[in-house]
Length: 395
Image: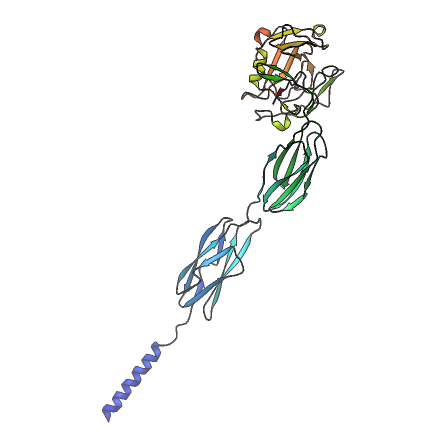
């Protein structure tokens, strides 16, 4: 009997010990880093989980943010992957980790994207006929458009006038029945500006030119933008380097008002959109001017020239050329130069003509000649702010 009671006592003690060992563990859950600061770019980050039981994880309705793994047991690390932020505002996502009885959250904060604005193409050179063209805009911000006409006004329309984000701008052109014309369409937002250069072909002038050593030279100087002078009442306009404004001399005064700040620092070649030559013609290169100067030359007075101004004939027929029978020669009037401060001088004494190139120098290469300069007829460099004549060559 005593033995039986002892056995029962021992069994009861063992049962008590067993029950004590099987008491439920108190679940714990914590997220070590509750805030994840993500850059605007695609990248991965870590969220550390401290837990002693099973858990699951979810992300709120934010398609740009994903996590892995989405469940586990005990301590673990969740990898957070974010896509690039395309918008210019900060965005957030919430990661929620749950056990049966506990819940913790972490916030993902992604940096705002930088404002972007780009266009393609950036330039077109359409034919003279009417037509429509597209500008593709890639952006994450609001933008608007503007048209700066270089010559003629109102010949192109742009729609829409404004937009937000990526889109397409339609440019509509009317038929061009005059000389080449150009405009710059600006797409801008705050400090971001993108330019679309538009140069529409026009009707070529009634000018065949004279070919000298394989280069066809115009017989007239450039007049107003996109036209030739008539070489009777108008011998040509003066232009500052890579500028579009045509200047005249009247009663020893320069018109319109002279631009004393026409600096083109850093520009090494006269840009096509600023070339005032008529349709089918262009600014000459330095090599072409040298070719002309070495082809033959003959200085004539105003009385001898047939053009009522002094100058020189250039070409293989320069010695015998006259106004009504030039042969293979062209007449370049010696009409002086407008200085950077707006003073016109050396009229009738020297001829100054622009090259389209600077030759890598601060000034621009130019063709300068006078009655006593034939033995040293070379290219010289003039200040880009000077006003100089232009003699075009055929494209």
